[in-house]
Amino acid sequence: MRKSLDEIFEKVESISKDISVKAIEDAISDIKDKFSSNVFYLVVLGQFKRGKSTFTNYILGIDMLPTGVVPLTSVITKVQYSIDVWAKVLYEDGRIDNIDIKELDLYCTEKNNPKNVKKVKEIHIGYPFEFVSNDVVIIDTPGIGSVYKHNTDVAYGYINKADAVIFLLSVDPPISELEKEFLSQISENVNKIFFVLNKIDYVSEIELDEIIKFNENIIKEITKNDNITIYPISAKLALEGKISKDDEAIEKSRAKKLEADLQNFLMTEKEKILFESYAKNIDRIISMCQTFIESSIKLKQVPLEHLESNIRAFEDFIRKVEKNKSEIYLLFQGDMKNILQNFDEKAEKYKQFISIRVSEKTKEYYNRIHNLSRINQKRELEKYLERTIVEEFENIRQSIEKDIENQYSAALSNYLLRLNAVIDEIKAVANELFGIDLEYFKGRDGITSESKFTYKIGYDVDALEIDPVIFTYFLPKKIAEKFILKRILDRVYVDVDRNIGRIRYDLLRRIEESFSEFEKDMNLKLQSMFETVKKLLAKTKADYELDKDSFEKEKVLHQDLLKNINELKSELDDTLKNYNC
Image (cartoon, rainbow, N blue to C red; front, side):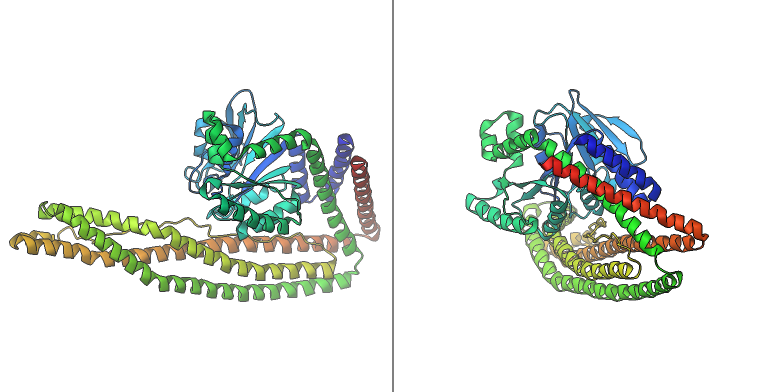
């Protein structure tokens, strides 16, 4: 069976060279890289902060991959069985560096490799883990939905390459809208998905049962599959238990059933899944070739005058699309104004809340230091005020940013719905006028720009300005103390108001930069769609300018290619029928 598929793939590759389309060539290259070594890709996917790296560490039985409370993994990390321990960094330009296993965080975390500035393509690790056989590669991916756009892009890009997926959810919170969309894409492309609910040690048994049932119903609806198993575990406890050989911790983690089922699957079904994945990828390439050739043949059958008329009609339509895009953008701008207006309405409450808490804490602290000298009182109060304002802001800033991000994501979703409707229309018009079946994308994004927020607290004192505390030495002690405390307390509201304004500015800048990046990406992809149509049309017009014999030869060549592709399609179907028998 494998030999039959290899022969079909070689024929498809040969046909693709006659077509010479980059998208098809890239897809063929990916398949060759993946299936020539006959390895099985077990890919860990999910939203950020679900505990994917901790889970992967538990599978490996060692605390190897960096973990934390902020979005960490920024690149793909592949772990394969090896007697020796080693790690390699593969760069986008083709370079490879051998690194110490302890240096992983320098390359695969947002802290040390923000937005993948080091241009790391992948990290490969060799380790003698006992969990699975040596032809299985475990792949840890970046989490979707964090403020880092490239993480989401990398995770989505690995769906087609997965043979089986461990889809990690957690109890905090249950499945989100972003995860539903992600799972929908995964279920369309991957046959085997293990659903793992992590962090069960955060909730009670009653709450856990409720969360499992809630997620189960949603997953069944998305995957159109009623035979769903959710494995509730604590990856943290399971990892700790494995490292310390603590059977009680492993038992408490409830990871044993998942481990047993996963090992059983890899021993009994892995080859079947790998075979089906290879066949599915070959079928995808055949379909890509078929679509391109059919479009080319249809265009060659259209009279030149009619073709030119349709080209003009398509150009008129694209101009309308640009106008429609501008109108959609104006609606989005209105949504952005509403977000800032909502923030401004809540800002007064934030200011009052923080100002009261900081003032009360400052008064309480002053009672502990009033025996110090007046200058030292002032200095200590200023340091305490700065510390306390930062602490109080940090307590609510994450909540403020999350609220803004949710509003922005909702507004962007509405924008995308409208824009995707436009893209659907482009596809329909291209099909109607030219018989071209365009492949297109659906945009996904959140706030992608990083925060540059810094706190600013205290007066800007000129070098020649005399500190007013000096004058308190001419006043009685009690009056002086009241003066010093009042002067500090008078600053509280000013500093709180100033930093609320700085947060607002930072969020506004991030939203504008994020949307600018998103819109640029969207426009490039739309432009790519238009260019695909234009190139195909230009080639067809050029063929019309050939002499009659040459033009007929071109038509015959494409018809022969289509015949060959259809034969390969039948051959693949027959091979799979025999396999299933």
